[in-house]
Length: 457
Image (cartoon, rainbow, N blue to C red; front, side, top):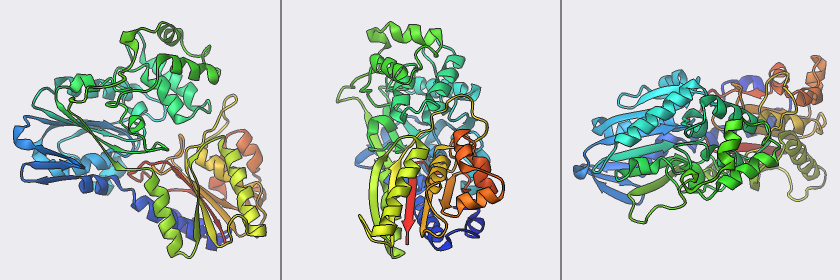
């Protein structure tokens, strides 16, 4: 998975780096969406099994597949391998820049059409994708089956704004939200109330067709609602969306159209809060985000490390989270508390970067976490911190994340760079690439929560 492994092991605390990279490689292999779909979805003659649910395809007229997200292409490949020409039509959207890599890695789709779209900010292709998803959903009827393949990134890669709002409204509010420091569930709370397909709104368009939602979870608690946004009832309200915007001081910065829409609530504007028990809606989470830390822990034990799960709910300002993790690691190195080396601290979740003004360069949450961590480490400390976005692209960059240690600051200084200044200007990618601490994987094909490993030997 890691394309620049030899460069990452050419300097710094090599023993710790090697163990961290081995854990990353193993963990990513264990959350493969293609393999997971083929584990949960099987076909024996005309009998289709999806997790705990069984279906007789002899009674199905048409099978459709729609989807979006950074792990959706491997899911679509698996579905085609299982159902073949039984698929009548299909369409998915993937993150811009993924298509070529996925085609080389997994082969081409034959029954399911595909487009690339923007992420984390939607674009015109995202809007076209949203309209195509809605079109297929609307043509599915009684006696049909429609698969919804959803993974992280779905909210940006397929957008269909409510009447009265434009694509520019959606682009603007997404840009504000992703740079505000808001948690992903807070961002989704706003997005779904401005959409014709999110927050469960797509489900009524597909019913009474049989709707099967397959998802790769990138949400901290593996809650179905946050991972099957098109088809699950919504527990949030229009008022919640307003509160999020006010909390992050965005209310006066969003467009007048958005403020007018959210300021005048009515029952028809609210998202579905429940579906009847007899609705043919079926859900299967083929990959849980918790599986990434469990895999890392198994690998750690094989490497002779004591794995310690710190949290699956990692959140906060990325660089400050990094400094906190470095402080815990330093305590373990100094005193053996709360665990004795050799060990690895494991955390999953999603931190955030709050931009104050316009950034001068490029970076991402995981890169800033690793950069923040190395500020407080000394050369010679037997500590390594690796932070990774599991889809292979951290923020708006082509980097997956970073791996740093006590030598990183010194190596940066020798080349005329200052990590602290880079963090203030949100330009850590430049420094990390210069000191060869940036991790490159390319699109991994999966997308669960971010993975942070802190190795102490």
